[in-house]
Image 1 (cartoon, rainbow, N blue to C red):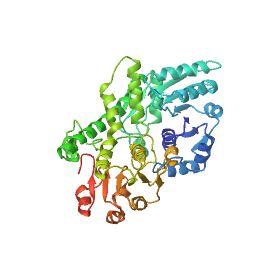
Image 2 (tube, rainbow, N blue to C red):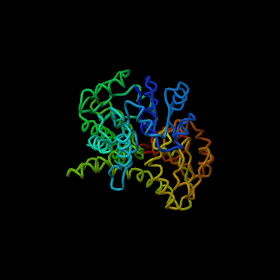
Image 3 (cartoon, rainbow, N blue to C red):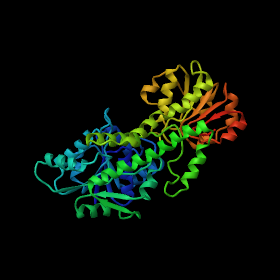
Length: 430
């Protein structure tokens, strides 16, 4: 079976390479010529451990190719994965223009039966719109099926999540389409959830919304733990051992970020509004996350007597380690707040880069953590990179003007840092 993956962003590139590794002939399609050129040269335009090696392997074996020619690619394939972007609009709804564009391309160029599999995160009911867009663009009628197959990849561990998934969700109206999607994933040993397309679309939103709410719950609890002089990490361990709760996503910090949780909660809330429902719990979870970084920032402000004229080092830009993704990263909100209060800000991240708007601001991007901390009045830890845990912290303390460490990820041992002479403050942990 020849497979086309439309969209070569994070999800699309990962999907294409994983399918190629499963033994299928894969074509990656994207209108961005520069992105296609980069992939054909064996480079990934974003950071994800292991993907570049897999790309070079399959380019050498000729089991994957990339193109900007939609007409040719659609004619030569049997199944099409839609992995295009679905960015948020200002009101929180989902921008469907790219889904519609590729659907209409499929309608125009498919010359026979095609299995269309929507992997992009989309609002409930999108499968029906995709079918209508395909049908309305067809010069002459050709049969097709539209299935929903949402992704559950965690940035930083995409390959592990792809080859050892918790589940594969297939939403389709006909048994033939279900079996065709099953065949693509025949090498996987995991539960298959077979349901309707609408339910599959909702499962994706419900999953991410639940995880985001769990994070917001422990983050809000951490604020109270600070007031009560209780270690929130011990609370998380104590409740996480309950199998009904579980330990994952109970690490307090300055908030979640990335391309999924913020966007998907906003999309689900917008869907609720459009259907006359209110998801108050999710509204509160989103608000807790939006303001969580302020909890640590306020403590630093009191400790330093304000940020005016203070030198502050921010270690970590990415919203989580092992990725270069800075979308909705709380570190960026913190940096913007520091700049608005006239702090001298220095930043470092092993991989992630500042977004264009912040790169133009009067701050310093440093090549090493030590450079960022030189003469600093405070250091903020915003991403739990392993390298930060193993820094020469006594040396950093000696280089700082004031040894204030504000740990936004609770990644350091408070007692150890205090024994070195740091003033240490985490989130619900000191």
